[in-house]
Image (cartoon, rainbow, N blue to C red; front, side, top):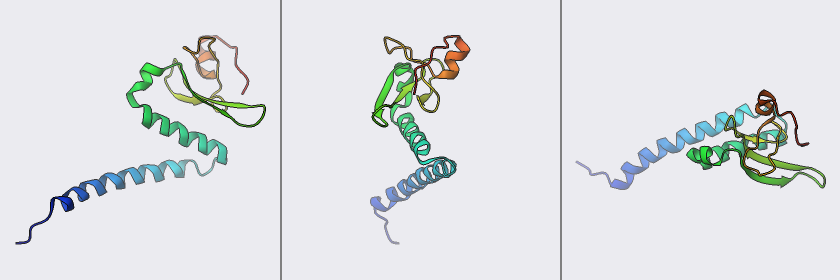
Length: 121
């Protein structure tokens, strides 16, 4: 009887894991097909932040993750909403910026809370 190497055994499990990751990525891409290119890109980056941060979202809630220059006048901001703990972008969900950058909120949570003052995108 032929012996199989340990390497062959581990690649079977690894290939299944890779297949599941690939399927999840293809599903996410198919959801973004009808969106404009820039919005689809922001959704992809938000998913990457969720995967990267994982359980640390609770610790980082309310903080700004990244600022990007969209053009000479506009700035895009990725942040974690203090209330709903979702990763948001100021162009998609809106941003109510806290002066101390500790309790930033998305527009929906700020409206529900009654803070109403929104920073322009």
